[in-house]
Length: 542
Image (cartoon, rainbow, N blue to C red; front, top):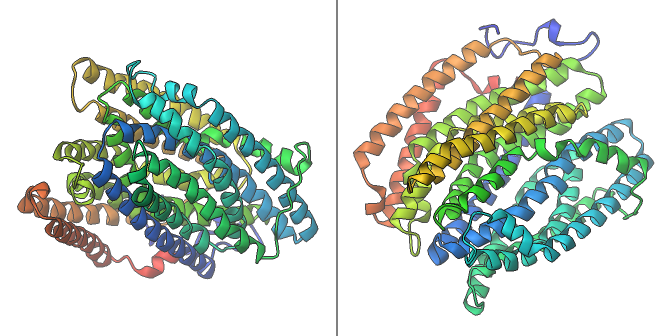
């Protein structure tokens, strides 16, 4: 890679004759779209952390919360298949291709049949999930004692949460259509309703249920209903309203299915690894699943704000470049996405590693959530944060395959990653479990992080081997600038953290004052060094 200025124009080798690359205006549009998506997601994450903080205060990290984690993660994983993940990865490129061709009738017919098939499948899966709830709960609590209260409780909650899959899949269909028309704000904002519904359910229903934690499950179901009620009319305002046609043999359905099936692992490999960790954690102390859940929720902040945002915005863009046979534009758009991940993902991961306990204490260490819970979640967060750059890179690299309607290559990477995660989990956790080490759950978090890095590395290797991505000039200088800024950021954060001392001994107000001060100081140091080394806002548009 060249060490010339990252703001330089792409070389002629990166462009096809007669094709235009991703010029400043187009990349500026991608930057604006990413900023809009991130801003809306930030509001969602704020509501999400309010929800998690309320969960910690009311319910702590006991067995009932662990049962909810199982009941929540299983339909949530299926959501990645039938909603945002696998379905969107197959649906958006085909929809973008039809949109580029300008055939409105073909687009409407495609949408009608895909919507009908999707609805039929998710209703069937939801019904089977409710019927088989006891067996599913037993599977994911396989290592729990036979008399564990978590198993029947998880089964009860699964019967409540499984219908959520139907509603969120319809929401995702509407969101994918809106994203294809470059309307990213509302789909990114609607998850706020998810968190608000769960908060309302905990506050309004918790006192009336035999097990107060069941209120979270009812909140999940209410959230699915609210989201589809908001997004479906927004899709109709575009002049596109799906009419459900149930024909699984229709060419449109078969095309999406053919593209979708290989993505089931590849687009949700992180969630598969989390499910693996959830099953292994059932062999540990009852609170282990809750500790991993809270740490995973904190990891979702940078992933949702930046990784998912960049990946969501870049997929329609890459799909259009592929449909136009614009190799230069395709490669340039991907290069921009990778630079943004390096710029944001590395400091995000480092910041969470350095401030894991401080962040956990500030968000959760109240009410039923003990100092022990804070420490255990902090250790898991530290281990899992190592994988943030890998998680974010995967979010950007996957659309590069899906835009070309190549779903088999990412599947190969996903299968290798999941197998590696299982092996790593066994290797890291088994010795600690045999020695009754109270920190055994950190081995699960570390295995998830390392598997995420492996997945990103495999995707990068496959993409470079295919020859569709040619890095633009300036990567060496870009990386050196960021490395210097990371060193400055770490020095500031560690110095302030050690000077401040124990966060759990502070009052609520001072925890937040010092946390925000340290975050601002670290971010300021990072930004100042980048500016001093010559990075300018215009470089983010290329």
